Image (cartoon, rainbow, N blue to C red):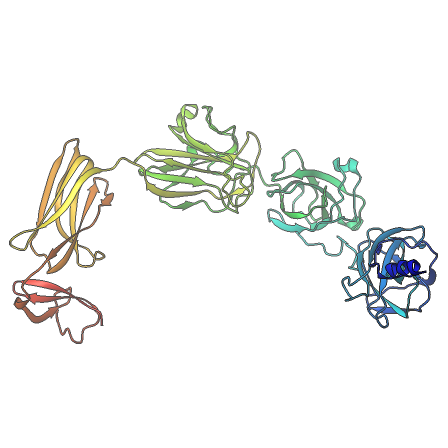
Length: 563
């Protein structure tokens, strides 16, 4: 008997286990629930397991809880597919807490994967009968059904339309034989009315998996049937002149975008409308647009209808087509020509040549680029930088990355960079020495000189504002060491700053490091007479903060007033 008591005590002290076990006895059917978006309650008396049936819609969220149950009843909720918990498949369950309760009450929030009949079972935590009165609370939350016909924006020729494709399944799936593939993604429909009769094309300049494009006459109604395939486009594709949509002026059409995947993302597209076949003004090398000053921007222009006009010389890129031309004269600096901007909406290639348009195939390629990875838009635009020679004419060819028809909008920018020409002079030294008569001897030495017209020696009191000391003629071109000097006979008492500037025959300048020379004097020679930097006598006690000169004998001392 003692052993039996110990055994029973052991059983009583066992912790709760098996909370996820299935219930193997028939529960009581409490009937069908009608769920709404408002919480409702159903009573479940003690002494039995209780279950309810309900119909659920795919994509809707269903919330169940026993949070309102009486006392400390330790409840368990199980949700099954089908109407019989003994034979149905368990979808989800909860013993304690869940999204709506605390403690030993149970709650569930579940998204229905497939429309159909389901059941919800309420028991004690161990799947036993309910030990005290319990309450089942329930509700249904459903978003409006997806309808691509609910809002149909209007689009126009040549205007880029950008949209965010929401992930998930759509409701249309034109037959796979239409464009060749299944299109389970969410659909987007637009209205377009052409103003002229002719062939139109779709252009998608952004990267986005595969999207199938369809069209149909709008008078046929907005639905999932009757669509004609235009093209299935992947990634950044400018379309193709061989994929035409024959549209009639004044007739309203629907344009359908239907992704081949359900992952979603961002995409842009536009409709290219028929235009008279007129090539751009700078279609040929001989009609190249001259860039007269830098920086330069072409503005938003198109290479539509441009012909292939490319030298046959070996290229660092592949091929080029539908190209147009620009010219720029080198200035000895690094020049950059780029289509890397958000207004360029097709896969460009930029090339730079020297030579003559009269002998196109004899032109020499300086540099080229097809895809420039640092472009913030898509990486399919182009950018080149080259060291330009002074006076050299460069021809810039902008076109599609491959031969044949490839068109779109672009902006060509040409900018000026740092000098890449040989240094006009090679400076060895630049020094300043204070002489006995309080003048300053300035000396400099060059190792070589190229096109050096003259030197400017300048002086400043603050290393910001400069005035000329002297102009010294340069040697022009020299491969030998040459010594130069000049004298400043009017230095100011205090620190005098000097800089040396070299000037080429073409007017280009280069300044070198600043040096400082300090002039001191016996302060007993200084008077109470002060001047501003223009030489006008002033009252130093009422003058504004700034730099002034104090008369000290035949010299002047720099005074910096701070308040």
